[in-house]
Image (cartoon, rainbow, N blue to C red; front, side, top):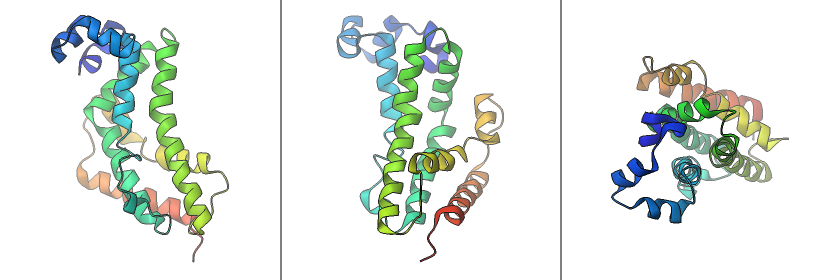
Length: 184
């Protein structure tokens, strides 16, 4: 993707339009600005984490299964080249383009966290989890995937292999369940 290769500041709407086979005017009429397009890209990418998880996988009666599904998707997103490139682009404009950074945060991390918190509220209501602060618990769960492997990806170093990712996923769910499961 163009944003990943050139960063948000240096991304060219002309080049993006040409790659998409549309006019520059089409990009602006649909997204309003380069930042609007960037926001739409982030929204599209993060939708797969919670919103697109099949409903049966998010059964409040089976939080371990739900957390494994959400964690799998979140880990795949955060370790993917597109997400890592997007983060590099956003970090590169932090301070210079505050609206783009706010939009990224709102459509990316905040959205995923809010959606997971909604699930945690449902599991709390079902009595399978005891979660006093669902937003904080969601943030803690998702943060477990943003350790050394994530930083290695941001720095374009050797990424963890599938075995390491699966071990991280299992341990994150185990730790979360140890803290929040009701034991019923």
